[in-house]
Length: 248
Ligand SMILES: [Fe+2]
Image (cartoon, rainbow, N blue to C red; front, top):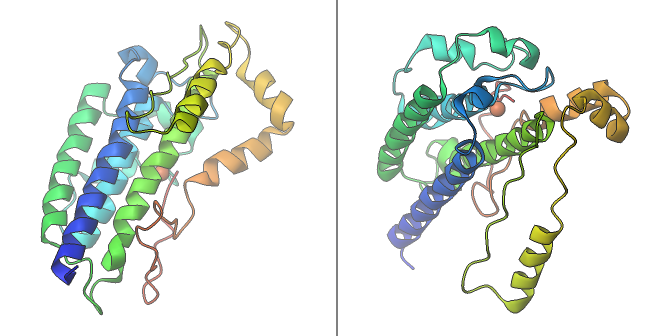
């Protein structure tokens, strides 16, 4: 394989992984009403629509500005979606983008990010360390997946019938063992949470201390140098430490 072919393959993989993380995010949120996306279901968690726009803002920060020096879309967005300046409990008071606006924003960012990806060199020795082996792309992809976990936790806290995403069927080429595993997972989905059950009661039962829950949840998507999906960005930039502004 020539270096050019290797680069093309890596870029195709980056694009596919970006698409998959976004597909998951929207698959979790699209079934919800507008009100459910805006509501803060627990003071421990953000309004769901905050997470959605935040992953786009994070993507803009790294893949547009850091990689391509593209000017910010809006300093207001940078403030609203800065997790360190706005604790989760207070985010419902911010002038958040609505569900449709958030989707337009993250789609616009993604379109530019893919254009930038077309033009960058992921293999050049001595180049931008963020680009080495697709590191920064892996980081952004991982960040969105981690917010999908956060979104799932929020969905578990919703009052009402509870929301249980349906596990997708395995691809047609999956082995019999993989198909059995997928069927078993679908059959073992927990029943809906009791309507009206207090979120704090459920959490206290499993984690005992809300403080421990906050530490675990808040920090989970904040780890500097978070590695992306296997194979993307295994070579971390050594000369330029990542900003601690990676957020949750
Ligand atoms: Fe984050």
